[in-house]
Length: 158
Image (tube, rainbow, N blue to C red):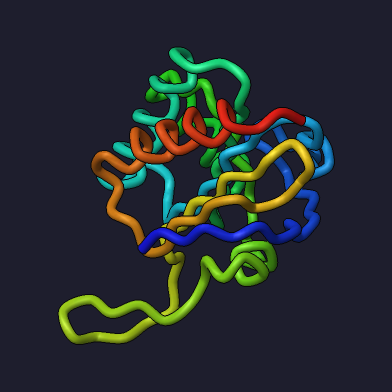
């Protein structure tokens, strides 16, 4: 499901793949794609990360950040293995996942459990969420997000 709304983002500071603190405010005054994914080096998450990484080299003017509960060491291995050009942030306590409603009840084969709800947010240079996707499928998702960025960024100036 896709939604259009303009709301302020929730600030955060998390460790990246190198163990360095990265804050949302580090990306103010630029476009940001913030995506939440379940786990490094799993089929869907690898597809999504590789697609975002590949597309990031073809489009300028936007940063792409992935967040999962994995530890920085896992992110580092994942980035090296697939030669990703992304920043991946670690949220093992799931505070930011919950704040962005990317953690919750999921269903799989009739079984309910808590987990990461694959979600993406397009954030403008003012720090506002201008488009969001919830419970997305990994295949083809990055292309849709990049296209929405191109459409929205060409319509507005900041």
